[in-house]
Length: 118
Image 1 (cartoon, rainbow, N blue to C red):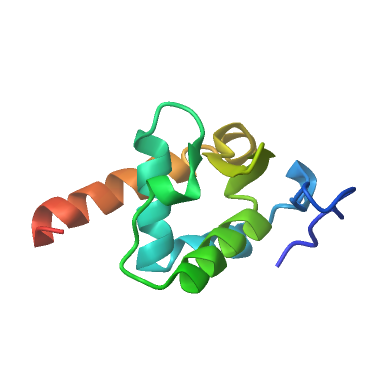
Image 2: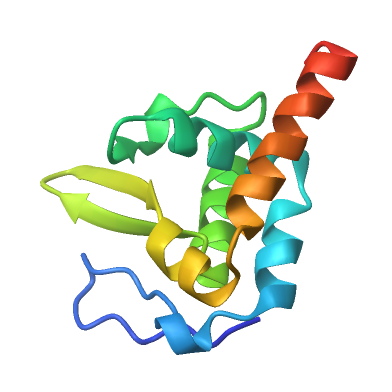
């Protein structure tokens, strides 16, 4: 797992810098179906969305865990705006490090959903 850059305040979350993002951490984060669902919904959203925008069939604490794994892997960026925690894909960082990976994974996930009716 990449070492996340320390947060400077309690309302600022730690994220790995671009050069700290590692392929194995990204692939691990994307390997879970719930986290893949989060990534698919963030990719389809127009801009940043709150955590509650993505409805997962798991408890709130488990949802929080999935978002944390994605953030610590460098797949998403989470920022506080007022009391809301907003989430967005780190598409530019992932594309710079692993060209085509995110689009390929998203396309494969879509094909799987079509094939198996998810």
